[in-house]
Image (cartoon, rainbow, N blue to C red; front, side, top):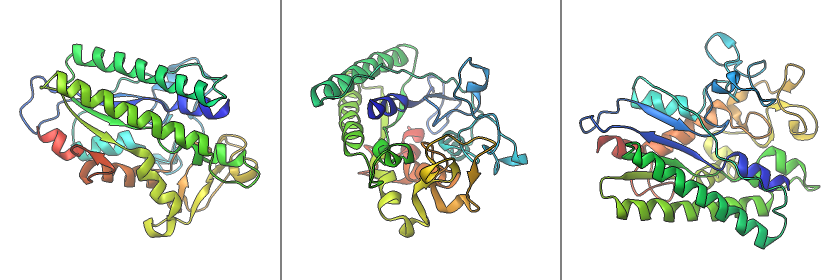
Length: 280
């Protein structure tokens, strides 16, 4: 189903701060594992139909040129590294599980369980490779993306998609806390992207947004039928839109989310925030 496919697409975004030889508070490098939400251009070199190395992507980036980011400008990975002020080395990877048949509640539970099993194995591999500080970015409210909202006759959020995201994030928290209990030298911060982003969607004006449902760039109803392409229409003011295209946030949204992850507190970022994590 479409819901399961979207959850798969954004199922894992991890930032592992590799600091085995670093002093407290020093972050020598950041390794970003994730999907298109964290991609800064690696996808340009892959054989895939899903690319963003063309306009109108990147129209607000320095030089106004598409870089491969699925955004009008910078994304969360850019802002995180900026606030950490480090030289970055990026490695991107996505871990997807086929879920085209996750139609029933039991199948959805099985699907989330498969994702968590994959996550557990990948986290163990990262630890074995030397990761001791991990920032986990939970799945956002995928049911409220323009892509899934557009499929609804009433243009409302897809409850199943959001429920699966909450279920996945809660299970991921259990994996991380379990590993931290097992390995006392492992420290982590979990950012609940779903809870954080829902604030902007449910109370857009309070956070400086005007449009929280439709995409800024795209084609069709709510600009969410077809992805952002050179032929797409786009909004005049990208900073007042929560979503750039049918799935990805605008630069403005990414910047606000990163600020919350860096200096925020529970229930959005816990048990510590990124500033505290980097200081360990």
